[in-house]
Length: 256
Picture 1 (cartoon, rainbow, N blue to C red):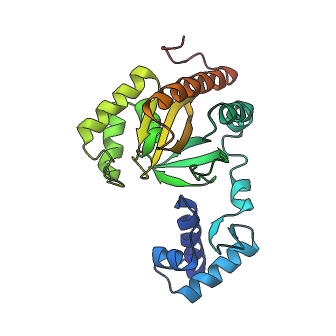
Picture 2: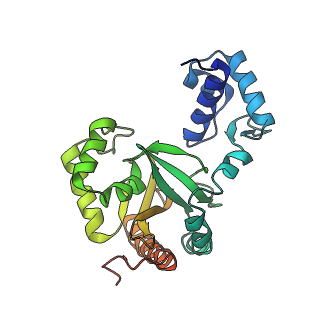
């Protein structure tokens, strides 16, 4: 099949920026997509013109643009619309970044973010993708699937070591999924990024299907074990409230 090379390259640049958890400069993007700086700059200029990426005027680094957010306005819009006021409440209560994450193939995708204004906060953007098994939300997205399906997914993805704290042993990871189902939430520290802690709980829809993973993430220095325990209760309560609003009665057994 014939393809358009310039379009392929532009998509490659756009996906690199969306997958990156922090703003990226021209040199970093150029290396990441394996293109020369001149070509990368031209692609970025075109994407910026179409509001697909946005360049910080001070740092000159790039993040996903407004039109990337617009692409996701209809993606699980039912969940996003219902969840929004609850996310705002959770942000106010915890002071940490709040996100909605969904599964797309072998990846997890961020479809909603309320950003913390704390100095050391987790930077997250709508459209950010990561391997489906990564982090607290990844464990929630997989915990409620049949073990046979999980095994097939892990056969394809493996368990990559992103940090020294990443779980790379499949047996240990499967036990963590079982623990997630038992207590109704997942908590990780330094699994995807060093210095980052996260707590996630499932949101179910009226069909009792897993609609999304609700996540609170912040600095590992701030989120001690005692704080994570309190945040977990808040995340569980909020996830269950959203599930109820979506018409689900499949709520966490530890609360109901």
